[in-house]
Length: 128
Image (cartoon, rainbow, N blue to C red):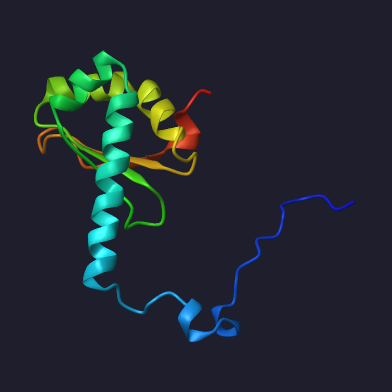
């Protein structure tokens, strides 16, 4: 029996046929499908949130992105009041996002006078 961290196995794509490898640059169709996926996830996420969280999201600009390594919920707070409400409601937001993947991230952008953007891992703050 081994102890310690499990080894991560990565796939070497050189063994795959060219048809099975990912494209080196995304096509227009790939980008369209990615945007549709993000819109669908955003809609499902928003509908799964409670009314308080939905109202909070309506006070901010927000979007779900899949371009980064992990699914990311980006919240841009227009004012200090919205920023503090977002911070006080991080656990419910993280819990809803964790339903999609525990590896998701939340990026919060406060108003410039308050601070700089920061990211949190959902699996660090979600309570399941």
